[in-house]
Image 1: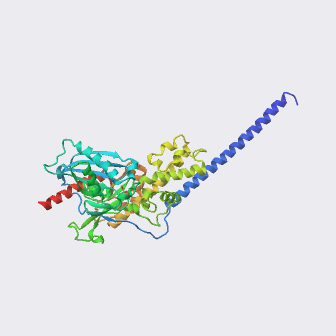
Image 2: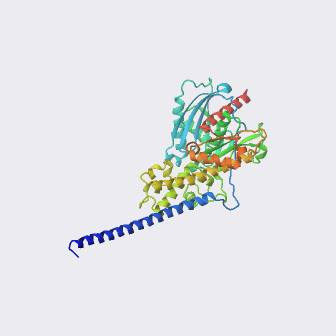
Image 3: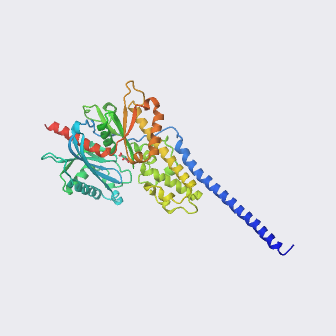
Length: 461
Ligand code: BGC
């Protein structure tokens, strides 16, 4: 062997060894990769199966079906200046609307949104209501031209309070419990209108609350104002709920003389629905256990915007712990509860296409389940109203919908609509219209304040 050939052989054999070593490392890496994706896929399947399958029979329906004292919806003839205060999530809104009657409808309207500092959602009721009333006072002070309050008349306010309330009249009601991250214990059992009135007084505003409404009821009123065929309203936002118009003889809990219309709007509080037909994944169970209201609002926790992102976060966290989805480190942000309410991009940037695809798959599984469950709820209401079968006169059925999940998440909206179409069948589906009723909860409260005030005036005259 020549001295020249020895190093060459050495080089060659070193190269062969190196190549073999690299190949082994790469093969191991590929194997690890494949295992990683298999594990991530398994987590996705674990999520997918219970998200799609029906559960066992038997259910424990916990719907409150609250009587709202709304026995007639806006006619279009409402006139005058009315205010509304819309409280139901992380923001509240104040509005003023000048209604011009049947011909002119809404003549002028102004509104302002204010976000509620997190700490006010769990302190005392005075702190929360003082904060809200201060914003209302500022808004009232900015009333511009084009809004007319008749001489000697007090400003009137429709109060949209989007939590379960046991109403005692059209303008009073006690809080049954908080939902959606609020936890001011001393408020439970108190009259929410009385609390607001006290805060309004403390601010020195000359204003009277003439209507207390849930956001679903406000949306139903606003929907009816623009389309007479509106029979139900659904909120798909931070929380979820529905309201519909019921015949008095189907409301056994109503005591007292029935209203002239023979009808009453019912606030279903459907977010509290729970059934063994609603299979829960390990992620749902953990989310519920760690929530402010364990065991409650289960349907809402499967559907609404406050929880959808949190379910996704929990799945991605498991994938990154079990399958190193985002390389070797678990992204610290993923460990923060509710971080995905503010979007997913901060978490998935700098990740490969395959990872992103998996993240999108997780989002779609969660959103598909949510949309299908919402469609099933709507189908249930239409069935109750007898609008799930073809009517000989092709009567139109309008469902007023509001809320960020429906408004901004196209995938969700399309999936919900196509599921409802499948449930109804093509023929019936052609007469059913889902109508986005933007800001309906506030507008509806102002409208109901206007119609109550007109009614009271008629009684006085
Ligand atoms: C509340 C309902 C409300 C819904 C939508 C739920 O958490 O219990 O009263 O209508 O959220 O805002």
